[in-house]
Image (cartoon, rainbow, N blue to C red):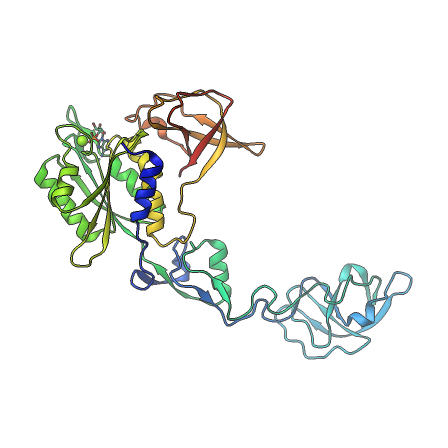
Length: 415
Ligand code: AMP
Ligand code: MG
């Protein structure tokens, strides 16, 4: 039984991120949400593209207005009006100004913008009643946000609204992103039936494939569902061999415990897998297999997770071990590690003290502090029902049997 931290580092060490050259696809910017950039992006545009005004007002020469005051306003002649999108035609000479609007190009000759609130216009003249703080006030210099040719976005970042907006502004319509890692999922168990089948006595519906398909997609993987596999060595062997051929990662549930029908480990070994982990000191989720294959003929490494079948154990072990591995595999250059926050527990948190325990519930931010609200009802690994709306798993470390209500607890963020 490996400690959780040790299991985590073994798993992450075996994860080889997708290849920046081979494991990429070209996609349109509009469908790039949540994808991971496979190459750095540069632009040949400066941002801003030209000196422009940050405010509505008047483009002036600083020299002309630096002594302006209410008592002694500077009077300038307006020679042009420059709305956004218009290219100025006239160079501003001493004693002249141009009416200018936010985002519009600065005219040649002008170096400063005076905001319209401190001016009064009369016909083609404007009186300026206050000196700007300095030359260059309210002017956004060409290239002050970004200089053409430098790196605009790094490889390995996930694309959200800000990144996609930047790419749009840089006129990048087509991007090279990592392909989504292919994650083959199947469930093992003679007791399992699919959603459409009437339930016979002793049977249960296979919910794990649905849970994992959702969790995998959320973590950036492409789930491929293989269905339910019987607890029969030949059937399992076939399923595992087939999975390894097509997957970057395989997740099976069930059959990794010590029962008479738990064959997964021995079949993995018979198929030439390297088994790194067979059980972890975590509750729920002790029987957890982690193995690697080298797939033939591609020579790619395939990660195999045999998760325990109890539905809560399946998700807890997914969140704790598989999700970070999947995110690292997907090409993310950072941010794939599990995130823990400190919270105040609202209830007593019990554990056996022997394994690192994860208790599910909800985190709420109250006055800037996290509070952890333990899910009510049974904390059995078979009780899927009260897992609903879980967004945090409270950690009770080995050696502790109780974290009393009101005390601080580390909580793993999950989604
Ligand atoms: P196992 O890890 O194979 O010993 O399974 C432990 C228990 O988890 C089983 O007795 C089932 O009650 C439950 N279980 C196993 N697989 C699934 C599944 N795919 N969906 C829902 N429950 C499952
Ligand atoms: Mg089973």
